[in-house]
Length: 76
Image (cartoon, rainbow, N blue to C red; front, side):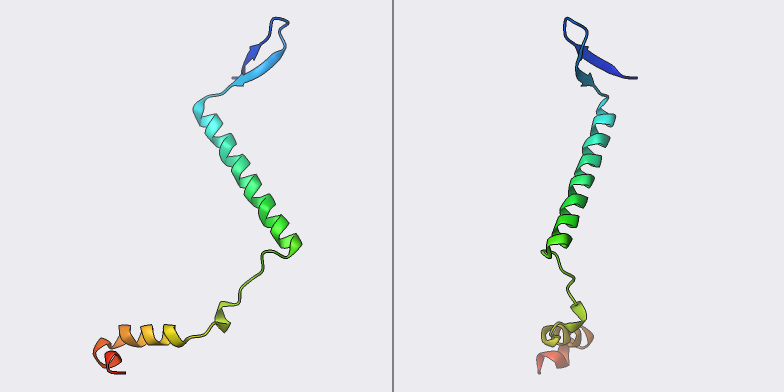
């Protein structure tokens, strides 16, 4: 059901929404804004894929060995 606030001439000036409809509209607007920002970043080269497989493994290897065998890893 659509409800409006009108002026004296009967022209629509505002819309009255149920809170659930309002929340859905706000959420959809946020999603669209986020998607536009991602598209802009990709188009301008600001957002690039990071190859995580090429990262240095020193600290990760140390943590993995510590988790696997804490006693012997401390002695390293």
